[in-house]
Image (cartoon, helix red, strand yellow):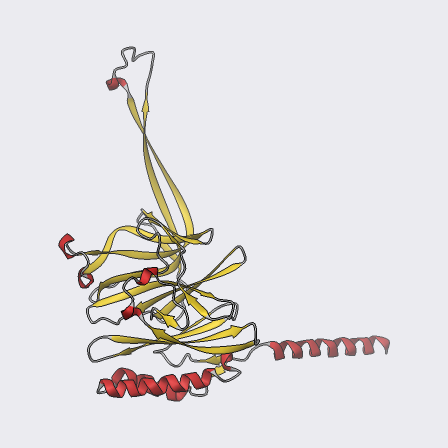
Amino acid sequence: MHIGLKFCFSLLLLLATLSVSAQRKPVIVPAPSSDSLKILSELMFNGQTDMARYEANDLFMKLLRNDLFNPNSYYFSFDSIKALSVMTSSDSKFKIFTWALPLKTDCFETFGLMLVYSNKSSTYKVIELHDISHELVHPEKEVLKKGQWFGAVYFQLIEKKYKGEKYYTLIGWNGTDALIQYKVIDVLMFDRNDDPVFGKLIFRGKGFYGSKRLVFRYSDKVVMKLRYETMTYTTVKTRDHKRHNARINTNNDEALHANKRKVTSKVKTEELIMFDLMVPMRPELEGQYQYYMPLSETANAFYFDDGRWVHKQIKTSDDSTNVHTPENGLMPH
């Protein structure tokens, strides 16, 4: 009888533990306005006039904001809305929602909302982002606050930590110009009020020093690679050594110096932001970004080191492989 009671008590304790665990596990459910948002997103892309698209976008923004003001909004799913990019930090600090509105002029306007956890109130707050990319003369030099933002539809979020500080790096696309595309690497931090701050002096390398974000401008007719990947590649180094035989070469004759070539190869696996360097089709077109295209001679990358994104060029062999590309959000053309 004693053994039976002990078994029953253990079973009840186990069931109670499982019940508490189940209660703590968040349940992801479709957002209340998912169906309406999906219909509106189709109107935003297929409306007969720009006015119709703007009206659909305004209602889309309103419904999305209403959903995000719901106390349980962090656990809402928006997966059914393909036009909406949702980036979620692994530490549950924030979600960022971005989308682009296509216009008849072949331009795109970019919109964004954020759901950010406030340490002061212990709740999530909603922040609207305002794209001011068209107002910035030197966007690489600006730190943007108070909802101001270099608009982009984000398709990757990279999270790094250095000396206890969290770095959120966002990679996205901007199409505000009919002839030029933009791809952006931006850095997101939070101030003492848990408000977003975009831009940080974090990039190192020739041509990148002094930049708080990176903006790549190029023709709307080409594709630029910009992806965070785990890359395995083989590097090959060749070195020539001169050998000198003092017993034979008594006259120090250079002709008797025999060269020895040493070839070494090394396999490396790294997490890198791989990107194409964009250059004008001809030198006289410099600064006319509608004529910029990828330079494919050398692979370019950033690696994270001591709290910095450091540029390097990689001369890879033919057997270089992309082991894993993190899938997160939308991938524009």
